[in-house]
Image 1 (cartoon, rainbow, N blue to C red):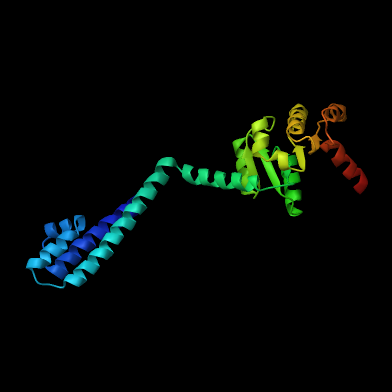
Image 2: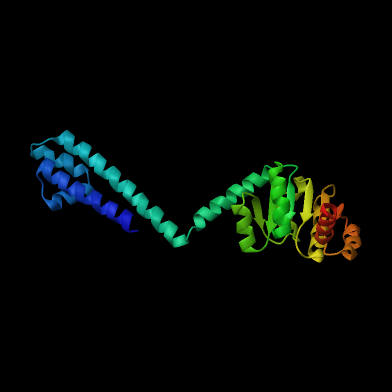
Length: 232
């Protein structure tokens, strides 16, 4: 607050000094002119002086006071709400962008697996919406340049916020097979034609994911093992 308050005081001082020099009035009268500029006209009805110059100067000073006042108000709001206003504006922009998406991919979970999938899709110019419940991972998704929704991907409301009804693919990327299966079931109910990709913890979980409607089941350990084998 120091800079905007100092700016406001500086404009007041400049106004008082300027009025005193240009019109030869005292400090009290000069301060009164800042509060009531119409007094300038009354003063020059009985005194000689550069009336036009003083009026022009008054306009400049009053404009400076308005700007300084707005600066103080904006700084006070930012300090009071700790960036909450900027956060709300950012979230509104993200929600608006998601509403305009169509045929995108919803990645549920932003751990290592989800990050890798989202980054790969982004490199291929695919629209991605990340759903993440943990605040730290949610902010990381935003920092990585993804559209993101904060919430539990097993909830219909959260999937709706991610635009699941207009999406092409929903990926359950959480390190929890049960949670991913629940996501697949919820997504299929909201968007029956959506493609479902489920991350499973083991081959034993693959059958469960298939029964839940998964079109593709990924077991990261199996995939990485196959890649190592192929390389060797």
